[in-house]
Structures are given as structure tokens and as C-alpha cells.
Image (tube, rainbow, N blue to C red; front, side, top):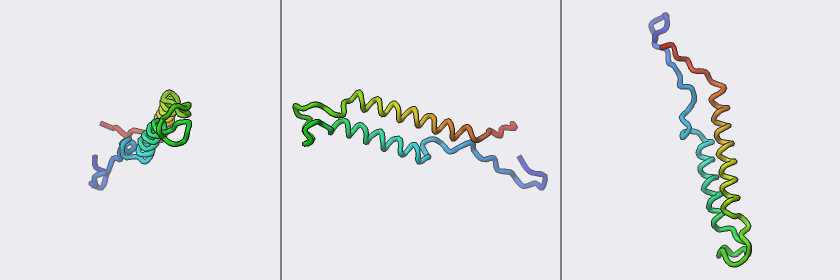
Length: 89
């Protein structure tokens, strides 16, 4: 569309694509860090996943990842809630 003076108006996108945001990068990094921590954490402190109790079990890691995912989805929803679509076509 053009403005009254004949100059084309720019229509900005609603929000940035999700993979281009810092919150997505942080989400991926933290998710990988949780999985690695769950893999290497054990009770005896030497990292060999020996006979002592596992202090950071897989079910706890997946719970944290689920909570992180919920938080990420809420943050993306809030980011999109403040914008409006300008579709006149």
C-alpha cells in the first residue's frame, strides 16, 4: 500500500520469529544444561554414576524442562499479546 504522498508504507511483522529471540536461545541452552546435569550428577561427587543415590534423577530433570517449556510458552504469548496485526488485505 502507498501513503497519500505516493511513498510505500512499510508494514512491520507482528513479532520476531521465535527462533530469532534471545529467550529461545536461553531456553535451548538451559534445556541442554539440565539434561547434562541430570546425566552427570550423582551422590558420591565423583561423576561416575556409582552405587550411591542419584541426586538429580531423570524424572526431576524432565519436570524442570516441562516447567521451563511452560514458562517459555507464556513469555512468547506475552510478547505476542502486546502487538496487533495490521492486515487490511
